[in-house]
Length: 324
Image 1 (cartoon, rainbow, N blue to C red):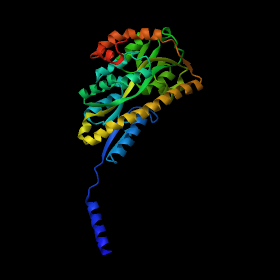
Image 2: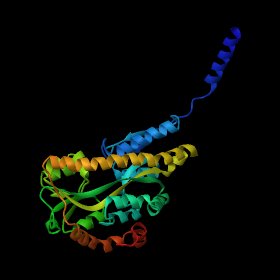
Image 3: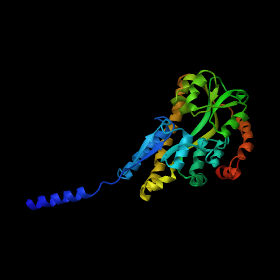
Image 4: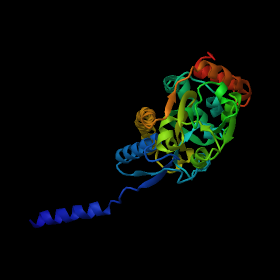
């Protein structure tokens, strides 16, 4: 018995002498809400990474712009103050001009085509562009198909003439809606609800789940499925993570990213369908116009936009096979 006690005590001393594994805390940030694809994917990534590193790496999720807007998050990735983030291609244009290719209106004929392209070899190769900017491209997230919530019907290109429409604050988006005849109005997202409610703008360009989830369905009467842009989102990481993590830990994040992104995409697609159903249930008129005139008119903006994209024609040919 005495021998057993001594062995057990000795074992306890050995266990106590072994230091606990160091724990590294990271942040992942985005600007959307708690039910968004960004949030679902972020939470999934955090769970997978904690599990697969045995708790050595913890990822804290910051949503609704808690660490800043997408422009600030982009700079944070480059300086290392932000570890991981979800950012749309439109917000990356000033820093990574190759992303301007996704501002070309009707670059893709459908959301399905956009998903298929980004999952293909050309789409995956585009992630390598981020290496030149101190950012790691972990993968493509949900694609937000942008159409028109409005306070009056917009069912033809002629109906676009002169309407005041809130657009993403990026040159490609402004020029696209100007080509369609609208008064493109860059406006902070947080100001949009009151702008629609008070008639400062007549319309916006948003995905269905955003329109419902962020309350805009309360102040619109119509939603027109123009599908002008298929806006991709990205899960990105700071290249400076290499100094915070071991090679094995960074590999875990890279390997978990596709699973997390898939969870976010699934949630987004379900929310998109639910958003359209909710709007219809609330009496909002859903319009599906003939898109041919919209496509023809919007693509008049292409020549000017292509001049601002490094290797623009090559990128378009790479992504859509030069079919445009």
